[in-house]
Image (cartoon, rainbow, N blue to C red; front, side, top):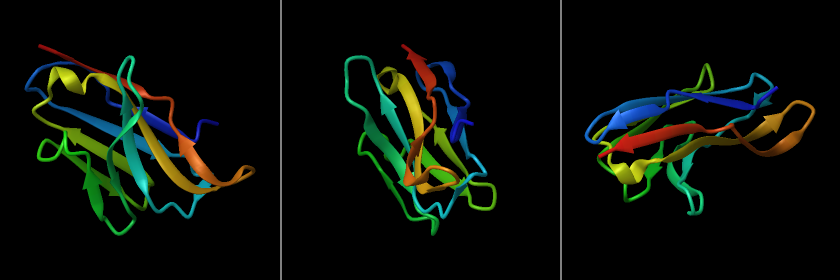
Length: 120
């Protein structure tokens, strides 16, 4: 079973919006921080935003004021609302969390990624 499942990616014009969702498997417990990362072709994976169970957030400078991260603790779902998208936001977006996963132990778990493409 995939530990995290992302959805909501797609193709959008510059200036548009997308909302990404990521649901953690029910086999993962004691989740504190959930985050979104992205990786563009030829570049390293970078942090986009993360949020604690107490709703403390932090963002990459490049997305501040445009992206908003939120979560539903009861359902272990994290969202990323992306507004005013730019072509440089084009990347595969990955969801990540740290927690205790049944049968696997404590660790950092990742989703399979969802493609976001912003056309100019």
